[in-house]
Length: 252
Ligand SMILES: Nc1ncnc2c1ncn2[C@@H]1O[C@H](COP(=O)(O)OP(=O)(O)OP(=O)(O)O)[C@@H](O)[C@H]1O
Ligand SMILES: [Mg+2]
Picture 1: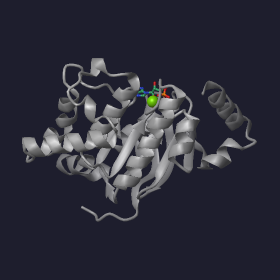
Picture 2 (picture 1 turned 180 degrees about the vertical axis):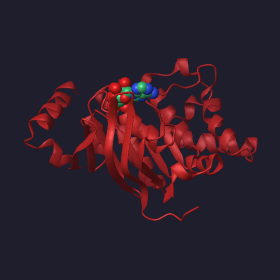
Picture 3 (picture 1 turned 45 degrees about the vertical axis):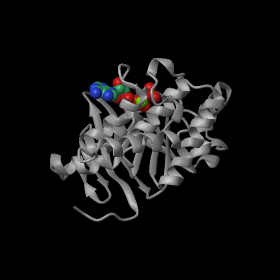
Picture 4 (picture 1 turned 90 degrees about the horizontal axis):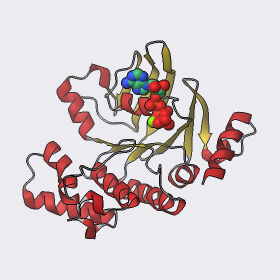
């Protein structure tokens, strides 16, 4: 496999369609190591599809995706799994396993990805990761005993517990009140700094975006319609962007 350079993700001319619907058309994009990129876009514009292509859950119709210089379309299943081991994915609306305690929820990805770890190592890692999200006391609780914000934190802990180099977040703050949104966003930023992760964050939420990142892209009509610093996008005179962000501001 190719050695890592500073581009953790590089997308070249990605096109993805479903039947007659072209969701992504000729998208090119890169994300540098330790950078946080925000992906904005209205509902149905292909944000989740983009993340699924990056992690190899969906195959593009055309174009290439490189993770640390590896063309994921050319990897064997075994090699793809190795690449994926370094990627954390917080799925949109990610649920915890309801019948498992927080401890078991967090241990799950470790057992799957690191079968060589013993019980003590797993337990230590679970505790350490719960500390990172400030929820040590929730270790023996069931998901039903947690608030929505706590569930998000535990979900976040579960997706970073394997120490991914690249984190993909799909709407990490949806459904949370503005203060919890701020807390979760700050947590994402702190984790990124502490663990030196590279992140791609799909969100509608301007509070979340402004806390987490500088650079953003805006998906619209299957294309990257805008790209730049969030501050520039929010003060743009473009009627579409003004409309999008004014609604976001009213919402929060
Ligand atoms: N597996 C699939 N089969 C067919 N169509 C799909 C599939 N996945 C997504 N689509 C379509 O692709 C388009 C983009 O979907 P996607 O989930 O990426 O939107 P999104 O930008 O994430 O929206 P939201 O903000 O609502 O989550 C939608 O029209 C959706 O119906
Ligand atoms: Mg989505």
